[in-house]
Amino acid sequence: MSKSRRNVRFQHRAGADQRRPSISDVSDAASEPSSPSKNGNVSKPSTIPEEQSEYEKKKQTFITRTIWTFVMIAGFFISMFSGHIYILGIVTAIQIVSFKEVIAISNVPSKEKNLRFTKSLNWYFLATTMYFLYGESVIYYFKHVLLVDKILLPLATHHRFLSFMLYVMGFVFFVASLQKGHYRFQFTQFAWTHMALYLIVVQAHFVMNNVLEGMIWFFLPASLVITNDIFAYVCGITFGRTQLIKLSPKKTVEGFIGAWVCTIIFGYFMTNILMRYKYFICPVNDLGSNVLTGLECTLNPAFVPQPYTFPEWTGLGTFYIEPMQFHILVFASFASLIAPFGGFFASGLKRTFKIKDFGESIPGHGGITDRMDCQFIMGFFAYMYYHSFIAVYKSTVGDVMEAAINGLTIEEQLEVVKGLGKYLYNQGTVSETILNCLDTELTRQ
Image (cartoon, rainbow, N blue to C red):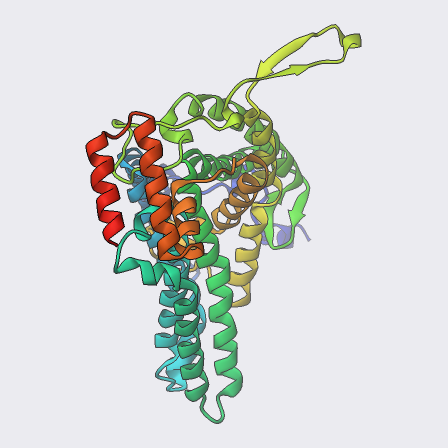
């Protein structure tokens, strides 16, 4: 009985025995003489090179991931301080690459089925959607430029109809390309493409609008998501015990709640810093501006300290604080409690197709979509919240020009110009000579 016990080999115990062998462990094991086998031959430690190779592979992955993390951070801040146009370019590139990665998941079978136009239609619908969304943004923010240009005016006036006809052309081509025996697959691809357009391209469009409304509405939501992700990891490995959701087994309730608290604290102090610089809080009126030239604007009331009075029974009196400090509580809560479900959705999608990452666009990090899964829904929320509770609506030059061009006849438009000329003369803005020249030219018309 005792002899049989000595021949029993136990599995590795939990704890220190399960730690990853270090380089010194591997080298020490390699230096020890191999034990002879029953037939007298010396057995070779075949597992050591494999363990060392696995360690070296993970070490190289960690180095690559770290390097590219700093490259992305540096590139982001350089672009942000260089000007809004560069951030718009980055967002555009992200939505195109993300769309490509998501579509690629389901495009592989199309090659096997010899369906030639599936991929072309995907890119056509992407181009059509971007034309519509970009046009809407340009017309909304820069209509005072478009409406006075002879060539661009028809495009701006009929933009939605042109976009619709472009989509209809793609729709007709899709129906015409249906092949017998592949109907189910082709309609699945059609639905998949539209899902990708909605979840990626449409939401990225609202992120671009956030940039034009002010850099703070882009940078703050993005930084909140990143901060929440970091603190969820830190809090999770520190005191995480209860699993949060089965889609992501490593997510814990303790990490989820701890990250929420930490994100609120971070948001409060970050907002307090960003509000001090007009480059972040002013809407874009010049796409050529950067952090050195700065921006000028009338401050949104959300960034102006307002008085708040406690009830008399508290004895605390009145204090002043920017309303934005209250809004940031909502932003931080959404970034902590709702935005992570964008990541859970992406995890479920990857599990459905049995893939680890959406792509390999970023060395060591996987695909762009793997990094942006929470950012899209957060940017969409920031846009909706800003326009619902923070934005100040007032008539702009573009609004007045649009109303005059679309709502008045040519004769009525000339009367408006004459009236404005007289008003500016009475205010001392233009001279009598200019007023007389203006009256003479308009009379000839």
